[in-house]
Length: 91
Image (cartoon, rainbow, N blue to C red; front, side, top):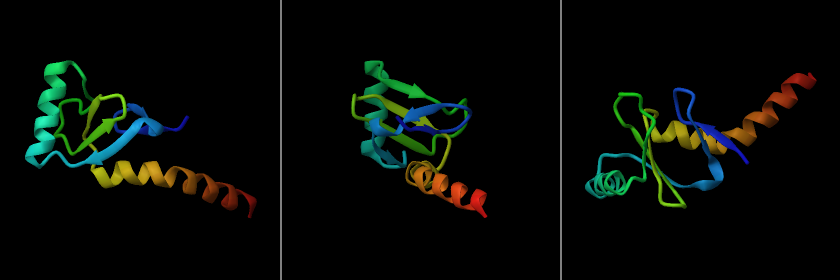
């Protein structure tokens, strides 16, 4: 299980994330509204502006104050960053 930091000490399981999108479009805003009404919204922004929306495979929607590119980079770069740390420690 790989945990991704989505800001302010909040962690999400990377295997459960289906998509990471920007909240600017109308369909994403509708997804957020529907999740809020259905009790499936997790607001991890701590009062900051929502910059990324994470949709999980179980229907939960997570709001983050980090840029979508930052969250995606943490998802893909986690394994690469670990390998880089190993090689830098060996030299």
